[in-house]
Image (cartoon, rainbow, N blue to C red):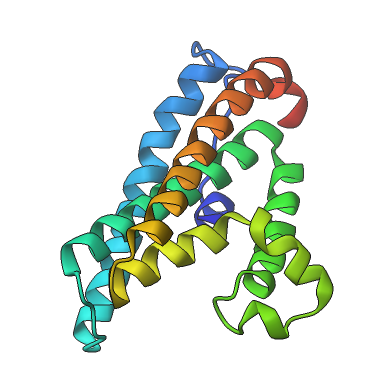
Length: 172
């Protein structure tokens, strides 16, 4: 999602007949389409490599949902805040790669990452994918799904407020 936002400009309503929100939602469709195909290639790669998946349908749906969450989040950040949004996104990426338990168990990480772990969206995305891939435990899956859904809703509400007020200031 971050690389897509760096390669394709999110756009601004400045100098067009479209409002900032029309530009946002219009371009969001393009970004979601790109995210969908990135996810599709990744899922097909997992199948091609023969990765064991207990529930293939849930794995694919969870993967698409995670792609949706992160594309909306990153696109909103970059769309609303421009270059500052990209910088924030890079910082979040670095923290999330280190602090979510996707590479190393969180328990062996530094105290800072252990403290940050419950507040990072990727923690819940990893939970969603692991549950779908390795065997579903609803008490793990549902809270992660609900939290990721809340991230989309909160992101959209905050983005709409910021986009209306700061669109021209963020994109010079």
